[in-house]
Amino acid sequence: MYLTKKEIFEQYDALQKTYNHILSMEPDIREFYEQSNFKSITYIGCGSSYCLCQSAEISANIRLGLKAYSIPAGDLMLNYKSYKSILKDTMLVVPSRSGSTSEVLKAVELVKSESEAPCISICAKTDSELSKIADLNIEIPWAFDESVCQTRTVTNLYLANLMLNAIYSGDKALLDEMKTAIQKGNSFIEDYRDLLKEVAEKEEWSKVVVLADSELQGIASEAALAFTEISLLQSSCHHLLDVRHGPIVLINDSTLVIAVSTPYDTQYQTELVKDLKKKGAKVVLVSSNDINWGADYTLLIPGYENYAVHGIPFIFVCQAIAYYKAVAEGINPDVPQGLDPWIKL
Ligand code: F1P
Image 1 (cartoon, rainbow, N blue to C red):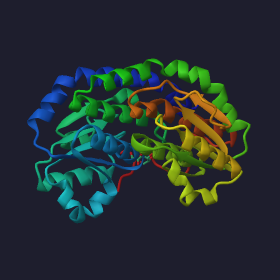
Image 2 (cartoon, rainbow, N blue to C red; image 1 turned 180 degrees about the vertical axis):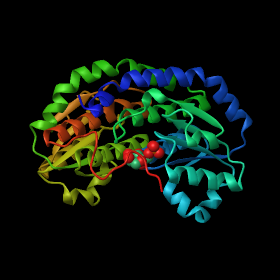
Image 3 (cartoon, helix red, strand yellow; image 1 turned 60 degrees about the vertical axis):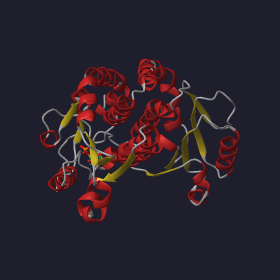
Image 4 (tube, helix red, strand yellow; image 1 turned 90 degrees about the vertical axis):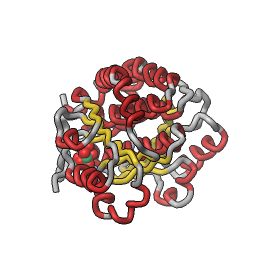
């Protein structure tokens, strides 16, 4: 069995461990927040990890009453001077699978060389280089993907970021919903495994557009990246209605659109599905609203009060289709040519 398949389909076991581990660290995390001086949070990462930073930034802005930023580590490393003003009194939160990506290490070192910025690392390796320069280390080795492309790891880093925000804001309801999403994960996989294989194997498409809003945007960019890395296909990611503002011109009958609906509207999004179908796209819709969306495939997920929790089942859908597509095209999903699991400069 390909490693990527194992990692995608067994991700809920790792998510359960991450959930339990972070809850067990709750007193330390709280104490760390209380003892640190910060007025904003800056999320730093590269590639997949940066995508998660984008979701975390929006979650923090919405939920914490603090300013939050996400910056690709390479960008921060090159343009440190231009970012200086927003780094004043900030706390760094750094998700990384390896904890060894050079840009990440250099960016953290730069910030720390000129400020007292407290730094939390969330890392899928123990005793990583990153852990040596961070002040609070959340280590989740069971989430480490051996394949080049991250799948299980990203869902775990997404969960970890969201749990940190829930702990900071004392949002027990959010923690409970994440717990429920994890508990329902394996049966969700069983319900939709065959359908996702069918989308990859029976339908004809050669490029992918992923659509999502708000706290799901970052993890949706990761979904698009998964199609690029695992299936070696052109992919892009946009906000739901924003896809009409330009990107739609390239949507045609060789496009697979995967959208995760927002729970706050049905009318505008149904119209959007209609327009995408008119362009010839095959549409997969992931939604908590059980209505007729007019999509080619609709996957029902449980409704959660916290929109961000929808990101957990949603990313699995994209990862599974990307995996089945790679295999259908004769691509080894574990080792995409020309890509390293992390980058050392
Ligand atoms: C960051 C990363 C991966 C990406 C690629 C290169 O790694 O950009 O997200 O898939 O293989 O490295 P990390 O800092 O999360 O270990």
